[in-house]
Structures are given as structure tokens and as C-alpha cells.
Length: 112
Image 1 (spheres, rainbow, N blue to C red):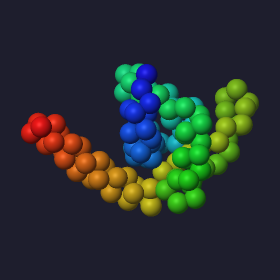
Image 2 (cartoon, rainbow, N blue to C red; image 1 turned 90 degrees about the vertical axis):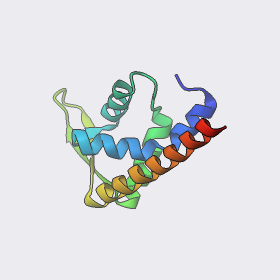
Image 3 (cartoon, helix red, strand yellow; image 1 turned 45 degrees about the vertical axis):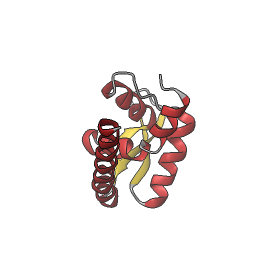
């Protein structure tokens, strides 16, 4: 589980993680997104509902994802999210930004 400081740093990367998950896995509901991020990170990253759904709403408003209601196998309604073309462009930009920041942090750590 993440400490508060690590959680704050993680929050800035949440859109990147969500976009990447949707780009790789295709349409998913919110719970599926959180489970996938947790699985891939080997339980290091845990996305709380209170963080995920506001982020999904902001990304939908920005046009990075689109959402639709579907009926699941269990006959329950679920809101499913899918990355858009604009979201794919944003994903590329965010991945590049993350690599640049990560490289800069690593340089500081190595030379301090």
C-alpha cells in the first residue's frame, strides 16, 4: 500500500495509467480498471473509488475516453469506459512526459 506522499505522486499519474490500461485491454468498467492496475503493479498501486471516478469523469469531459452503459453477464448495469482517438494522442504525450520526468529524477538520484 502507498504512503501519503507516494499516493500524491501516484495521483498525478492516474490518467496515464487509466489510458494505458484502456489502450491495452479495451473497454472496461471502473472496477476492472482498478483490478488491472493493481494486478500489473503487483499490488503496489491501488486505485480508490474516490480517486478513480472523478478522474474518469474529467477524462470523459476532456474527450480522452467515452463511456456507455452495458448489462453484464449477471444482469447488472455497468458503465464501461473506452479510450478515444484524442485519448490515444494524450496517452502518447503523457508517456513521453513521464519518461522525461522519470529520467530527470533518476539523474538527480544518481548525482546527489
